[in-house]
Length: 217
Ligand code: SF4
Image: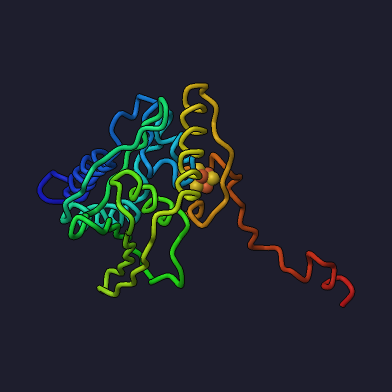
């Protein structure tokens, strides 16, 4: 407390405000416009974010998302779109190097062994949106370690993004919640409790009593 003002609360409110303006997704009310981010991640999460968003995630998650966005903002953030019939797929590249390579950064706590499918889908879709052949996916840790993966334009992966974007667009129009897509993303997802039961921790039950061994001995 500083005087009669709760400084921590004031800072949290400021964080919330910045966080609310964060996502690069515009036209959230138009189901015919889907951002690649929405189609490449869990479509159920994207649906909730549009139709019935939870308040911002916990402070630790919020700070990590703000850090990622801070890094993104230091690049040029190129926006583009791709039309497929009546559907518009929007995408944001972090930067395009030499007017040739589309670059996407992902801030991670630990460098992965291989690239994550949703990051590949995102970057590949950007290659179609910006009409480029090659892309670079760069994973970075807060300590500054980096790992790059090169991606070449792939039709099948883009068809998958279009398919997912169409499904999301249709379900948004019909007010139907997409199916659960179990993945590692669920563990830190703010909609976990809407998709799964919250597990109860059992502290008094031992494995021995559960399997009856304790009784015999
Ligand atoms: S908990 Fe998993 S399935 Fe549910 S919205 Fe989040 S990421 Fe999707």
